[in-house]
Amino acid sequence: MSNDLGAFLSARRALVTPQQAGIPDVGVRRVPGLRREEVAMLAGVSADYYLRLERGRDRNPSVQVLESIARVLQLDDEHLAYLLTLVRDASPKRRRRPRNETVPPGALKLLDSLVQPAFIEGRYFDILASNSLARALSPGLAKGGNQLRDLFLNPAEQALHPDWEDITECFVANLRQAVGTDIDNPRFIELTGELSLASARFRQLWARHEVRGQRGTPIRLNHPQVGELILNRERLSIGGAEGMMLVVYHPDAGSANAEKLTLLASAGLDAARERQTVRQAGS
Image 1 (tube, one colour):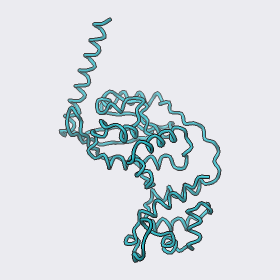
Image 2: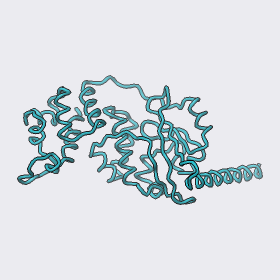
Image 3: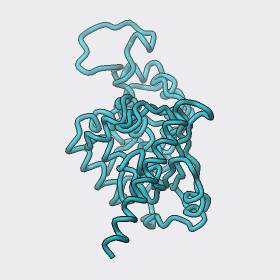
Image 4: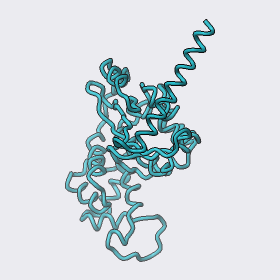
């Protein structure tokens, strides 16, 4: 039986130093972070009870106990919410139906109408649809691609992101939040298994149990055609399609980034016209 609660508590405990917790750092520490008995003392529970929690022998702690432990482990609201789901979802689960990843027609029409780079992603960052300007921004944004796989395994995609370490941390934390305890999905198992085998960076980040939602934020790109681009990244939920998001990159109006994006769009249009001309000549 999996012990998601214990794995989370152990990982987060290792990230809090005695100094951060406000207690003396005495004795030889065999592991980073706080000892179990230190967490128990600061949270006001017995050391034996906390040990049972980490080892999965008690799967029904009260909300008050979890909030006390969260305070000691310095968890923010998102991490606390995730911690509570680990307890709520600890009972045997009914087998979930596979998620339908068919993009609603209305979302496709909206995507086609946008003049900014935009694409539709699934729960595990699979690209379900994209417009031409998104593909001009990155070939990895073509339908069938996966942003996580490209970020960790594709050198060209890594070169596109000068803030690669921050970007990868954000994506893995968001994956952890999006998946929660629903870790028996074949797509999730396939993706995380591949990345765990091939990427030390992914293994490191996944072991931290960071939980964070993605918010609208500027993102910096080093594009091979137009140089540095700073675009605002927005993620919008698609109604009636659970876990599916519309992602739009847009520049500040009147900025140099807007001009560069216009150049990129023009270059993509010229390339499309050339391909059309070649096809017509060959027909």
